[in-house]
Length: 271
Image 1 (cartoon, rainbow, N blue to C red):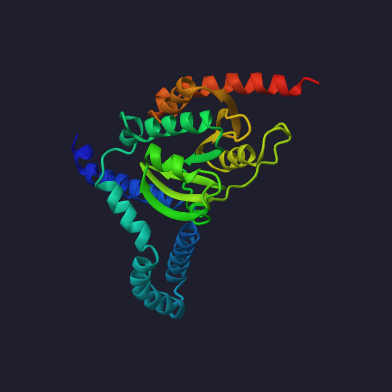
Image 2 (tube, rainbow, N blue to C red):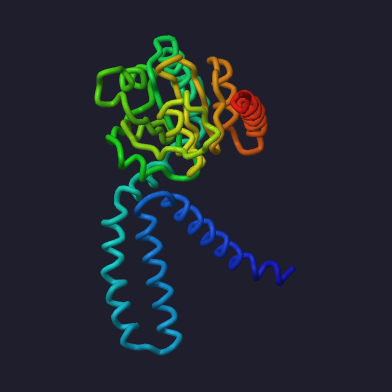
């Protein structure tokens, strides 16, 4: 018992530092800032190796760099740090998605309207892996998600009609963003660039993409490189609601996607 009492402080400190490092790396993952962060980690490793080997000149140079590096770190990562502190002060991340009138509700209503009017749309919802590189490829918006704004952004003959919208939390981070096109040969030729871009993005990240076809008005969802097509408002609601619940409740959505993907593959493989 005495041993446990003497160890609880070091264990608590180790757990705190581990969580801090984990969330810092996860926050910067998928951004250009991640490369800078990895560079700083490498400099820290070199500093410790030089100190261990008694390389005093290298130690002196790196010590001076670290003194300036604290200020440089705050300047370089100022936007990311501000967003991180803002997230800490907000409610839970998923509450804005699932509550009535939240992100999912507004998204379903806008897709239903766009589908009925055969207006093409491509919407990506960020999850654990950051999409900041893709956000930077589009027009930065940072506006609250709403049905009216989503419909307006995809109106034909507007600069924001082409490209994709990226949603982070309950905010539209960017519009007109460029996504990587999938090279999957199983995607039928009848599907256009929007579907290939959606599948391509979900192959490289854990994002969820919602696509509205401009030709047919059909609504599809792409996740983990798999495409589920011809969803109505109820089906779209079921998939999105389950995907943005805690991990233990995501199985029904993934089972639904797997089932539809299997049917899709069988249909496209027929001569």
